[in-house]
Length: 207
Length: 181
Image 1 (spheres, each protein chain N blue to C red):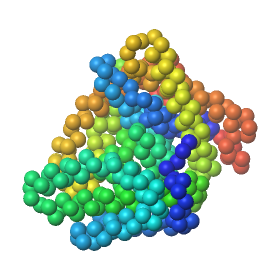
Image 2 (cartoon, rainbow over the protein chains, first blue to last red):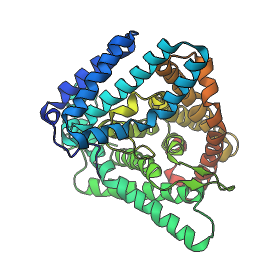
Image 3 (cartoon, each protein chain N blue to C red):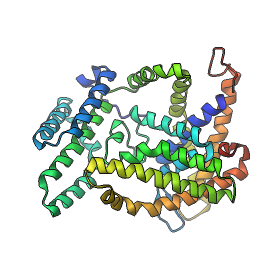
Image 4 (tube, rainbow over the protein chains, first blue to last red):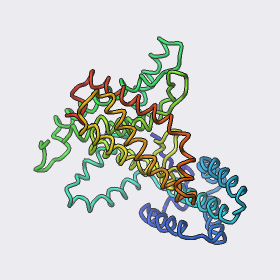
């Protein structure tokens, strides 16, 4: 499965993912605490600079991810144009753009393996509360492995629907998709158990 | 242990797959994305706790940078967009849906699941969504509620369909319905 990490290698790819995530959290909170258009405009320019430093291809990829905001920006323009509160509208629009662009830049410059490592780190303290971090890691790997398979199931069901009906596939293919997924889950569970289970310590075999 | 874990993982993958298949049509030819139905289904089929865990697992994969949301979106941006409140409400929506299906055992299953999906997948999820939107767009809750009402009829239909799907599932795989197990 293809992750959203940009194939264009930038300097930010080499920063540790944990530091990028910590910075992102801090900066996003700050963005929502500020109401000054000047500060928000400067922040947006700085984030734009980050994208620019990755080169034209990286910049274009980044801009494409921001397209989902246009209905909201249009709404804000109409609303604040009608009420005449231009400054408030500008603040909201700048904040939306900067927050989303900043979050995307972290996703685009962090590899999946690095992000999984950070998640494992974050989950480690929960081990004391009885969370099996090994099970979480295995579950992540399973979702990565099975999503394309279940999607293929859906495509095949849609295709067989088309073979029998002139109309487009309806919601009726969802039930067999769920049933097939649950069957797969049982098969995988049996296979895991046959290989000694997901826990290799004293908890093994407990249900 | 293995069975619970694989069901949670496979349901997370199913929510992803429902977002990736081409949109389905209703009886009158209206296209729908099935992904939000996946959240209702997770709660209704797996029960409150496992359903919420399946949704949390799915959200973790989105946060890690996988484009699993309908339309190929994903990454950390999914948590700071104006619509992120809805997304953040998903695990609670699945939990509430599952809890109601677990507790309310009278009457036909399809009706119970549809009602549970309306309460969990619409009332709870829109609650989160409206609060998130009001923070992101700096508008009052009432104004944001007005903005999203257009999407409620579609979700009502999805809740009814979830009821029908779970009823059909209960017939073909009686043991699979962990919420009633």
